[in-house]
Length: 118
Length: 116
Image (cartoon, rainbow over all chains, first blue to last red; front, top):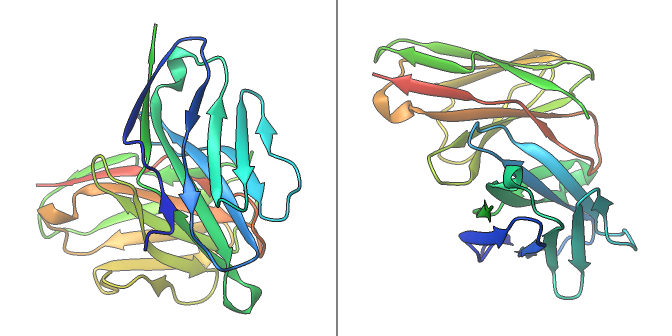
């Protein structure tokens, strides 16, 4: 079974509107972290936002917020007031606590291509 | 945020040659570095995890002798693609973290390798 599922291969949004990118995850580890990265055409992976499994509040970073629903195992990214520069691939990722408390690997979803229309 | 550099950004080489890619953490000490490979329009695939001073841990299906990883210091890891072939052409990205925990993982800008 996939650990990270992004069901939207592509999304369109009008400039200045908000958009939600879906992400669901699967883990039995009680301690994990959820990440969203943006990858523009240049290829660089840009960190956007992080949510820890024990965090009580949803993470926010500027125009980015993470809608964390632990019981549903979802971690959707909400981008408010979309800008043309937001057009890129967006990857959801999860890191579980590894064996012996060490770092687990970062597992990526397949990504969602967001296109912002002027 | 933390900065990770990668060099070169692009490389074109002939089949059979070896290519070395460097990954550096510029403003922090990276206890662990990761190497990923990404094919066009696909997600990142973890190739190996390297800890400073020890041998890299490779993912299943990744050839250790083909992709040599050296994590010589807390700020430098290198990936050498030995005897490169056209099927090795890909986008290679390194990443680094500081210490144990679930904190953020920062990525380098990537290296586009084209093997002719």
